[in-house]
Amino acid sequence: MSIVLKLDIPEGAFSALRKEPSEFAKELRLAAAVKWYEMGIISQEKAAEIAGLTRAEFIFSLGKFGVSPFQYTVEEMKEEISRA
Image (cartoon, rainbow, N blue to C red; front, side, top):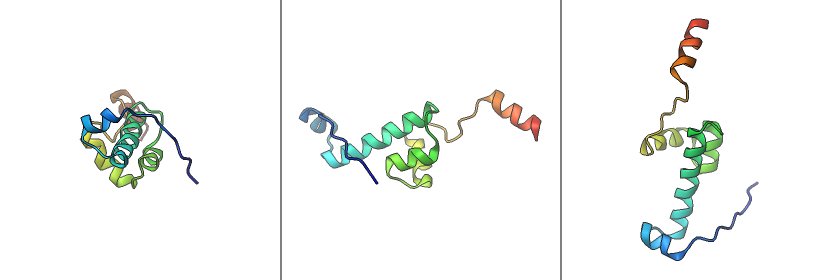
């Protein structure tokens, strides 16, 4: 099931970004999903779903935004290794 969300975007945004509305919507979903993932609000799986991508496609897309697919701090990694 999906929900349709209506956003009022100024027409100038499409011409400024050189995007058709459908392409703009797709990129907006991806950008939101990447940012929410980067902030630790959602998982990779949920972010991929929001973006309309497979998890592998989403992970690949993270590179375009300069976001690491690994969301661990150095301290968390050290703690995880010490428990192994």
